[in-house]
Image 1 (tube, helix red, strand yellow):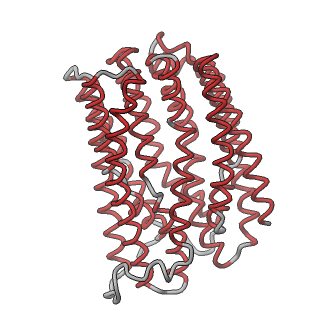
Image 2 (spheres, helix red, strand yellow; image 1 turned 120 degrees about the vertical axis):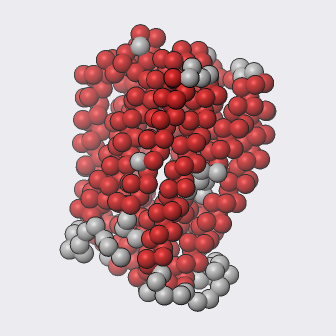
Length: 432
């Protein structure tokens, strides 16, 4: 199998190189997202875009709930089996991850449809809009691609993953252009997002299957999945814990938009969505580093646990610097970008954008801590910390959004990000 680096590279250097490949895919998404976000916001108008943003946030929140983050399971246990030259065990963990994805998608389908019709009225959705939301959730759930992502990251094929992931922004952009030229309603733009997810999943599976065939040139004997739990200590605990961590993580990503839509109105929710997406686009390089460095931690945990401490420090310093640069960029150009993306209707979002950028500085300053704890076999510690902070965040968010609207939601988010950073750092220091 062709690789993209050499064994002489250190974990941080290799992670940065792999992050570069991730950014090639994700960065294209960040660049194009400004265009298709502007296209959608301007063509739908503030009210309709707000409804679109709420449906999108709800669908993505349910997707996060349904996902098992099986790519982490593939990387953690697959790294052990790869080091032990045990292809039969490696194949079984890949099949197990695929079954997790499939089961989660089926269970999430029932959850999402029920949730739309139970909660849709709280967001002011009409019955046709609830039907749209339910259909959109179905399409997103079958876009789960944890197992193939894990395969490509385990085999150090971030370059292949980057090529596959460029399908997502390219398809979204094409779909948004078609919807705009045809004068489509919300349904047309939701269809564009849904098709993009499904097409990207297909591309990821094709890429991963090709890499699996390269790696397993000789027939692999033994059962395909039977015995996987016995030969991977703590497998179910790890899988459930990482899933719950991801579910709590949605509190930071999607819940504030839904809370603003519930407490204020759809226009405010649409503005909050634009702010979060702009901050996310600025932070993509460092988020890519976090995802790229987890496989390195998983391999170091097998052969050199002491090196993890040095790697975490260097990666977090890089993250903090990137966060400060992003904050300065928002201060200098935030209003201009908001006007470019949404027009005059969304200039009111600038204070929210500033506060969310401060929250991003805290998030990026601890970018390597959570992956390191998970790689060291401490996902339960991350779950405990996230759970405690999420409870406090939910309470603060509910009160702040009712009193101060979008600005209150942003302040609550920044406070929760700072608290999470402090507690995760304290937990990591205990592992040293």
